Image (cartoon, rainbow, N blue to C red; front, side, top):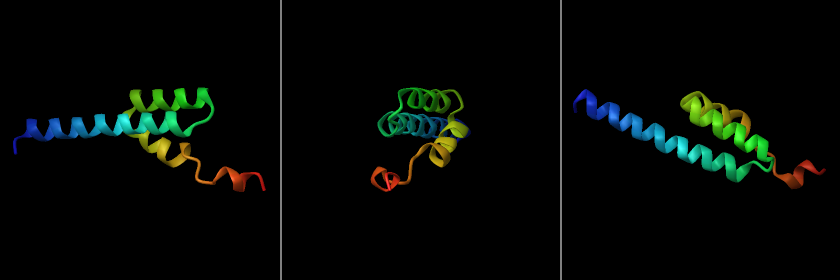
Length: 68
């Protein structure tokens, strides 16, 4: 494969990851400001924003366990 094809495939993969990340941020975050902030971070800093959201932004404790 040529370098331009590889670069295009990487760009498409990053774009798809951004869309999935923004979708997750909007769907999973209950606080509107938080969802907007994570979405902007993912869009403006694609790789770091997405990794940061996956590490810090996703709530891993179910809400029924938080109440206890």
